[in-house]
Each structure stands twice: as structure tokens, then as C-alpha cells.
Amino acid sequence: MPHFTSYDGTEIAYRTLGEGPALVCLAGGPARDAAYLGDLGALDLSHRLVIPDSRGTGGTPPAQDPAAYAFTRLAQDVEALREHLGLDRFALLAHDAAAATAQAYAASYGELLTHLVLVTPGSRLQGELPDDAREIFQERAAEPWWPEAMVALHDLESAEDLDEVKTLLLRIAPMAYGRWDEPQQAHAASEAAQLHPVPRAGFWQGVDEPTRLALLERLHEVTCPVLVITGDRDAVSGMHAGKAVAESFPRGRWQPLHEVGHYPWVDEPELFRPVVEEFLAEERA
Image 1 (cartoon, rainbow, N blue to C red):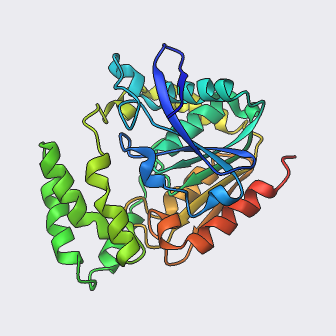
Image 2: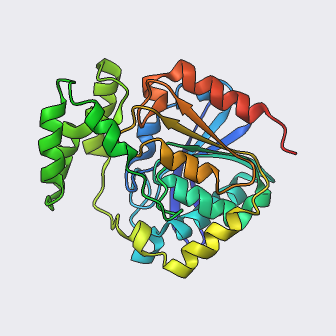
């Protein structure tokens, strides 16, 4: 697996899939192996996917300084990757929590982006906590997995042992998908082995309020087109968070997908892939 050297000398692993224009893809979690992204619903058929392992995951060692897990610092790793690849400008895709990293990158290096795709993000960076994820979860109460997931959600609030957390996450996993069929079950089963005991809280706590507000203000100056994708069955992030994120950018657009959960490329790859490919094919003004 190739590596690049980041700003503090850390050797960060990454993998590439496919041929074509580069699309750098950031995994969420935080602290989950990027392997869960797979080929993002066969996006590698049209693009060269460049997928780094964030600090403390996959082939990348944990950070010596806990502050390096802050999403603003992780954005510096993205810039080091761009320099390593020799890209003048590039397209960036981020899933889940990594959308905060991607927004921090756009705020500092927006002129280097041709396109930005944010998949099922939360809106904590925007200072908003929409409650529609809870509503989506409640609306699915008739599904057979729901009672066990409800108990596991309650137990997760007090769980401290990582092994216990992994067990509970598998029980609540169906809420993250549009349906609970074989592809979704296989994808969810891989999560336990992909989680790592890095300081996940530092991802947010390493960024103080003045920094967050300044970053949010700079997003209004980002000129590249931005696509925010959400799923109407996503009981993790919900849908409305994506709308708030899209509104942070002058050229942001919000694209809800039907019958899709937190992992659109798993639920509906034939719906997800064309939406992303058509967006990436647009010329940047």
C-alpha cells in the first residue's frame, strides 16, 4: 500500500482504485477504516479513487499528538495528499463525519477544488442538530429489527468498553440502511473490525468555537460547485442536516435520494453513482 508524508512527518497510507480523473475520497466515523467505502458503488469505473486511511485506521499509525485528530488538522493531511499526488486541482468526496474535514479543507484551500461531494453529512459544524433522524427511526418501528435496535440505542449511551460498543452497533446497524437485505447485512458486519480506539471525541473537541465560526464564514467564499447527498431513510444523520450544509455554500445543492439510508452506494448504487458522475462532469465556472 502506498504512503504519503503529512505535515508532521506521519506516513499516511492510501489506496487507489480505477482509472480516470482523480477523486479523493474521505471515510467518516471518525476512526473507521476506509475499507467500508469499497468502490463507492463502482465509481471507480469512471474515476481514479484515491482513498486515504485516516490517522489510527487501516495502514496509518495513531497520532502522537491527540490534537492531530481534530478535523481541521485532518484537513492538512488532505493537502499533503494533494501535493503528493501532484494535483493542481481535484475533486473531493467525503462521507459522514469526514464531511467536516472536507469543509475545513474547502475553507482553507477552496481554490484547489473542482468539485466537492458530501455524502450523508451531519450539520454539527453549522451549529444545527436537526431531529429528523429520530423521526425517521420512529417511522420504521414496524420493521422486525427495530425493537432490538431501540434497546441497543439506549444501552449505547452508557457503554464504555469498545467490544461492547461494537456489539451494540451491529444491533442498531439496520437503522443506517434503506433496507436490511444481504448486501446491507454484509456491509454492517464489517464495521466491528474497522473501528479503532483512537480519541474520537478529539475530532470535534479539538476545534474551539471561534475557529468553528470563522471556518463557517469562509465557506461562503468557496466558489466550486458542491453536491450534498442525503437519504430519506437515514436514521443516523437524517435528511435536513444535508440541506443546512448545502446552504453554507454559494453553489451548494441538496440532493435527497429515495429509499436510501446512511450508505447510499450500498442501498442504491445504480441511483447513487449516476448522480455523482453527472455532477463531477459539470464544468466549474
